[in-house]
Image (cartoon, rainbow, N blue to C red; front, side, top):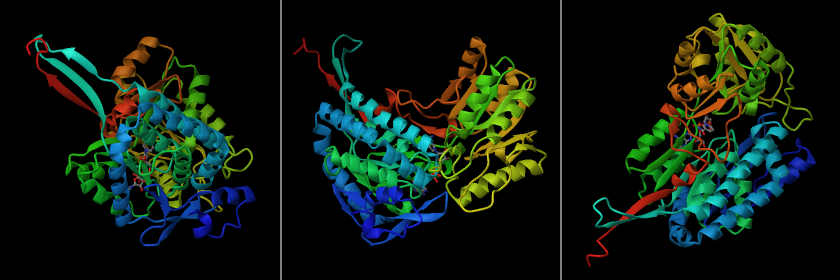
Length: 502
Ligand code: NAD
């Protein structure tokens, strides 16, 4: 089932874009088969650079979601018994195939999500690395055998796959947010149902085609795109055959899913929102701090959970940091992600773009000064200019809420204690960044700043070999690193009577 079955008019697209979209299966993928939704309905996917429809995707309902869970449950037993080496080889082949198809994945992400092509290619590398990392982890699942403290009985500790999982993923990193869950689950021997984001479902569908091609058995990965997320996922959460929910998305939706998951005491991983502080101390290398700020703020147009949300800068360097950051941000090319030289693409939709502008308007109404940007552009697409704000009042919403756009509010501090207090004044605790040349201070901040991840003199922290995740209301659990596979394994223990006493 391809877009030719459901295709909208895409005559506004380039021939290569149309050709790629024509190769993406746009149905549901259940028990190894592509099929339409039971209701026969579809939903539209838009190009955020133009607001025009680029694809029409099968719109799963409750019945389809349950079919997908049935398929995952049916496949679980045999999949758990598959040799770890075989599971690892499937992931390795998927890694190689995604890398071969890097240009297709990048263009598809640019079309449905808006990020510039160069950034989309960066995400292909990042997203593919989870497949490679967990292909290597599949064969490293182990346990232990020990003598109990009394010297009599013996303890055997072993790991089992947790069982069928439900994955709910966000639109901002369409490939990486999927591979960060699918890869460790495949490595651990779990089956799964994935509900991709309705704004950017196409990348997950192309990834599913890759898994089909490299021989992932039917029923292991079931995909249910839908415009009615809760209708599809709530019945699964009530079904005690489901053993795990892994969610990446906003904190409010995460909270509500945690409540639903409580009824079946479902094991959960929650990768939620952030409000990352970016601290620049008086001894920082300002060149490095500005370069780091450009990455931490503008990667993915600021639509990243790890995005620097608040710039907390020592009062002695704040003016210079602000003017240099504004000069660099003003120089960027804002254009459709496929255009030559595009550095900043559109935001995901009108609601998101208007929400970002409201935060800027609220800050300026409370006295903030705009050093660059701050104006809603004319024309089609959901573009917003890179914006720097100084003199931001402590109560401004832009400091409290996740901005999810290219806006950098700067506030100042005088002492390290004040910087830490400002950094921690949020219910979030995902990422934080510090720029200082003082090693002892950096190590102190690693302990005093409440964040799951800290970048020291670095504006990028995501790494497949690192445990990604937050503290406080940024979530529960870790993805990536050695820790990532543990989320898909349960620990069991066998107590053995004294082998010498029998
Ligand atoms: P969102 O919470 O609106 O949606 C995330 C996913 O949940 C989507 O697939 C959506 O369709 C689904 N969903 C929404 N309501 C639901 C419901 N009631 N029941 C079941 N599913 C539901 O978030 P978003 O706008 O897609 O993504 C942006 C958010 O994700 C930001 O807050 C960002 O910080 C966060 N995020 C976190 C991480 C992380 O690793 N911590 C990574 C990327 C994004």
